[in-house]
Image (cartoon, rainbow, N blue to C red):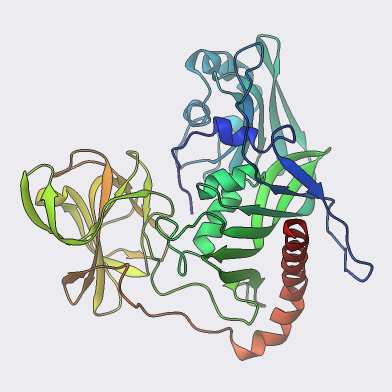
Length: 426
């Protein structure tokens, strides 16, 4: 599941995860159900929300989870978490009590409880050496604690229904952003989360969390997922073979890794589709639009849709900063208007599906930040949303036995969630 920023209004969505504003139903297990490692959990169903009520301080607080970026400082991370500048000035001196915060590890996640006005309440970071760094508000100041921990791994089960957006539904079901992103990544070969979502679509999830003294310190891996889109059911289970190769498969053993992703960005609004005639906002004339534009904030990561060799990385006319990837013949893809290129992206470099190749910008002929994406067949631009592209291959026969033993309990948990949800709806 790669790293992605999402610009969205979380305040009201957070309230949907509170019992005061939602329906929370606990469920039991049948006598014959295997319960090893299943933590006591809840299933949340979204309902229409009343108007939120402000606290006396005029603000709400909510938990945020972010992944540390390459070369990111602690102050930069706090800004991304929504902490106000004046707060950062008070947090930084306290953070110097921990050496781990001066050496943030790229790719690791942090949890922070932040108010809507930018006040930091709690910050948690599980460092690489299993040392937990906690920053806690004490009056107008902060206290930093660093301790060696052995977090307990728990399996969490969640279920929800789409009302307006994927993140609105996962927030209402108390599902972390990182798990929502992993789910979208897993199903990206079958579902275009820009265009295919429908009100009433449903999902069920099984994932890991790491808990210390009753508090979550880190969200782990998505283990199993089911997504019902427009009445069609998609399922995925995680499996790692004896050689250490890991991935997601259908319960029957079909790999969900497609030769090409449906989109170079998992969540973003399509601002202009593939068209034979579109009024160009800069040139002020009608012309063909042989690509898809994805509106997103400057700096949003852009990923390779398939394994490739970089055929071009540089400045090119109206494209601005452009990356062209050469996949297996006759396919190639192009990514324009980038603000900058990812580290190591140059002519001849090899990239794998899902690797970050650049960041959204507005270079070239662009009125605002967005990604211009083209999919080419033998050098000719084609609409990727209308093409039937190559699929993947099934699990190797010699691993069928291990696969069944490892994934059957995960599939059983999905069945449990589905049956419980159906009973509640009935």
